[in-house]
Amino acid sequence: MMSEVIEEYSNMYIDGQHKGLCKEGKDCDHSANADRVSQMEKSYKNILTELGEDVNREGLLRTPLRAAKAMQFLTKGYNESIKEILNGAIFDENHEEVVIVKDIEMFSLCEHHLVPFFGKAHIAYLPNKKVVGLSKLARIVEVYSRRFQVQERLTKQIASAISEALEPAGVAVVIEAVHMCMVMRGVQKMNASTVTSVMLGSFNEDQDLRKEFLSLLKKN
Ligand SMILES: Nc1nc2c(ncn2[C@@H]2O[C@H](COP(=O)(O)OP(=O)(O)OP(=O)(O)O)[C@@H](O)[C@H]2O)c(=O)[nH]1
Ligand SMILES: [Zn+2]
Image (cartoon, rainbow, N blue to C red; front, side, top):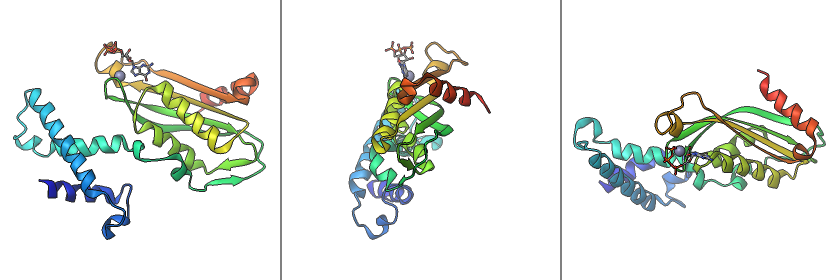
């Protein structure tokens, strides 16, 4: 069983953190990871059994392992760091206008119910001599959303990471999301969405700048 997990895990991991290193076995922690996946697999088996399912029926045979791997993917942000993600993609540039990347898809897991919440993140910053590679803003969203979260903290962590990395004149982050814990269970409100925002520096101090950013978000 363990060797099957290691093999399964290696396949997944080639596209993951270790990439090329896996094949050579350098710096790899396959057996610790395989053990972790194997423990999670047991836990999923247990959950299914407690829910009255037959874990030996054909359709469920590999489900606990799949679910364990899926959960690892959905929380992969715990193994990522902003420093690695930015990886030198910060450039000196005397650009003094606002940079906005909007409609960044985001998928996260609510830390209260472990079900998804998802939507869009919109990011703006006013540079102060430094700009960042545009894709890195979306990658910062990935680092923090692929964890167990509440939307408010997610919004704040993204804004703080940009603020620390770039020391810009201002940062604004808005997240619009739908929480499955409010749709599929609990209060069961299909159409409720949650909007959170964090405004730092000039976006906090300058009402016109903030308004300009928010009005740009309304445009298609
Ligand atoms: N502020 C905030 N609350 C969240 C987020 N995700 C889920 N929640 C809320 O967390 C709360 C947990 O409340 P509890 O009363 O402990 O849990 P519950 O009985 O399952 O609550 P209901 O969802 O109302 O059934 C709920 O009101 C959820 O809507 C989030 O990102 N931010
Ligand atoms: Zn929830």
